[in-house]
Length: 184
Image 1 (cartoon, one colour):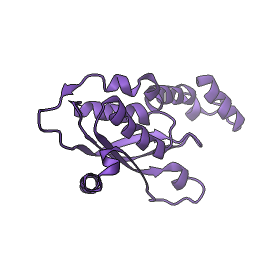
Image 2 (cartoon, rainbow, N blue to C red; image 1 turned 120 degrees about the horizontal axis):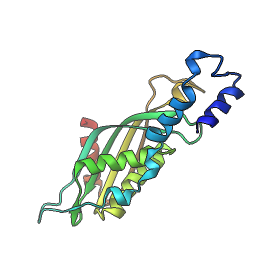
Image 3 (tube, rainbow, N blue to C red; image 1 turned 45 degrees about the vertical axis):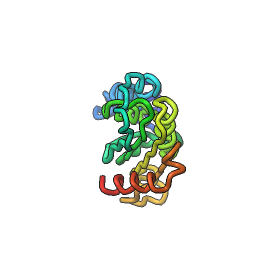
Image 4 (tube, one colour; image 1 turned 180 degrees about the vertical axis):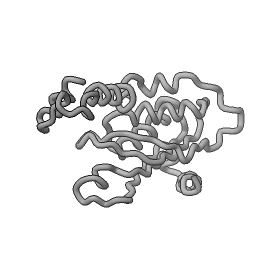
């Protein structure tokens, strides 16, 4: 990855050996991308959600986490985007710790992925891997693709949502979640 960054800089007419501020760029960029921006490829949602607890008998109500900061990168331009995630699931026989939901978000967002695909994959993982009765995800983000290039719409926000199971079919349940997300 370091040599690829050096080649990228050379293609842009920049030589790290001749520009002191770029001397460490290949190493630092490679480290950031491999250890932070793309570390989600090292784990799978099934692994993240493997440790489960039995849902309390008779109490399988909506579990929601709101206001979760997240970051990702667009696969088209390799530019970052980030914002706030709101995630909910309706437990089946099991629940997971809140930290595991956060790890699931990080596992999938630390990949090259479109915002709408990220929302869908988080919802699907909760629904299929955890066997939740329903799941919902709302992602509000600022896309560098929109703010730094092209139309340059500073301050713009993109919203992607995905629902599975009961949250896709039960309008009242979905509305409860969306109200929680707006408050978050």
